Length: 232
Image (cartoon, rainbow, N blue to C red; front, top):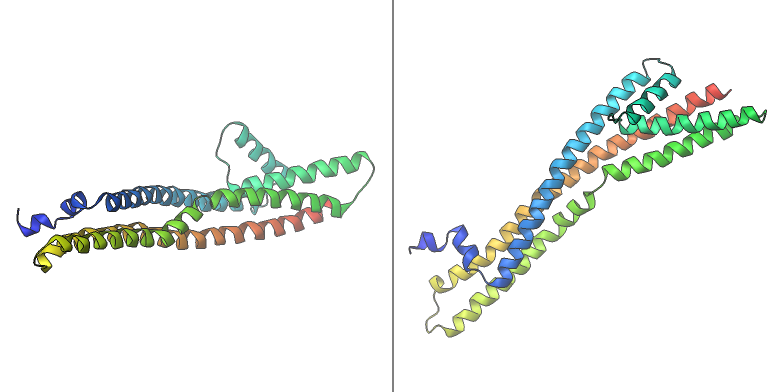
């Protein structure tokens, strides 16, 4: 077997110690999970942006609020895909209508109570939607921060074994220690392979989700003003 074959990537992994192989396997599994979440989150954020834009166009086109509420309820009942902003609107409008009807039956007209109830309902729906959007972001952050150290642990362990093996060799040469060190460094490489995409995806998706959150919060405030005018 020539030197190139001895130091090939597959051969280095196969000849590594059990501990280093376990570290590599763990990092590869984490990397696979990370890529799964990265791809799923990419589609989720893209869908949230598209659905938000579609609902904003419908909302600001000047249509009747009750009609929008009925359309949202109909979509949900028939299994249609409703966007996060549409669900926030539905929660606020339902609460506003409920409180308004209750006040009318008692002969009351408390504007602040109606608007505050709708705002609280929208805030609760907003938190649920943000929790769904932020799902698995903490995992990506953990992978990005921990994976290099896990790979470094495998590297340190492999280098320790390589130098311990020199104790049984009469003449220590670079050729004798090079394969062991190369095997150990593969663990660091795999750790970086797992960490870099996770860090990039976490930073990008956190920025995108923050922008979506700002759009949701702006809508809640603007819609609250509209409800306040209607309550009067």
